[in-house]
Amino acid sequence: MKIAIIVNTSKDCAINCAVSIAKQMKLNKAEVYTLSNYGKIFGEDKVLYAPDFKTLFSECDMAVTVGGDGTIIHSAKYAAAAEKPLIGVNVGRLGFAAEVEPDNISDLMRLISGDYTLKKRMLLDVSVTHKDKTTEKYLAVNDAVIARGQLSHIIDISVSLDNSPISSYRADGILFSTPTGSTAYSLSAGGPVIYPEMECILLTPICPHSLISRPVIFDSNASLTATVKVTDNTSAILSIDGEKNIPIKSTDLITIKKSTKTLKLMSLYDRNFYQYLGEKIKERKS
Picture 1 (cartoon, rainbow, N blue to C red):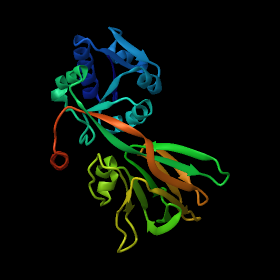
Picture 2 (cartoon, helix red, strand yellow; picture 1 turned 45 degrees about the vertical axis):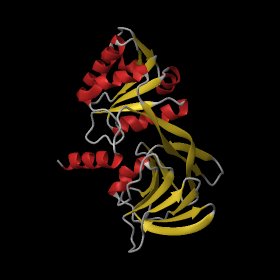
Picture 3 (cartoon, rainbow, N blue to C red; picture 1 turned 30 degrees about the horizontal axis):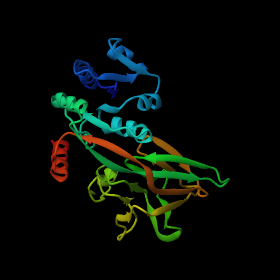
């Protein structure tokens, strides 16, 4: 069995944890597969290397990320494309999406024997169609955010459902979230918590200039489109999972819908999601 390890190399604790996981995996007869630029971390002792994420996920059977939610989200896009399951070890502050804490990494050996359950998470297909009819496509694990640019005034955003106009917002922006992303930026913006294995699309306004604008939940079959009125005093960007920022013009059409791809997360524990979430939020306050 080939188990990929992806690590946040900016954190010493993540590096130490990843090295320990690799040693335990090898002692339990698993093959450890990782990125070639991690060579100085893992050395050459029975570790297989891939030149990039795409190759890594095409060759492995499953993957372990060691870092925070950002490490999981970045890896998740490749995992979903390759249809490989993923599990996260949390060395970040919150780690909503992570399954394992550093003190419990020995539990990861259960992956080798198949002692885990798979939980599927819905993703979003996001596209931007320009005036010349060219289209850029993106995959979102947490959210797609339309937001005002730096130093910009608030922006006007129009939203349609299945090609029928439904609402307009004057705001700092709006979020389109997956259930997984409901505990990320959307939660800070006042959106509801949604059970992560549900399938729906959550729209959450960001600082709306209105007394009645509220979050809205759409069926997972919904096809949502949005346009932004960009003037001389405004600018707008589309942010995908906080990783990629795309400048938006008035002539651009943004489309958001459920992706045909799904993220498979491996689970080792039988947890009450809402209780676990409450514990994580308490940790943030401490």
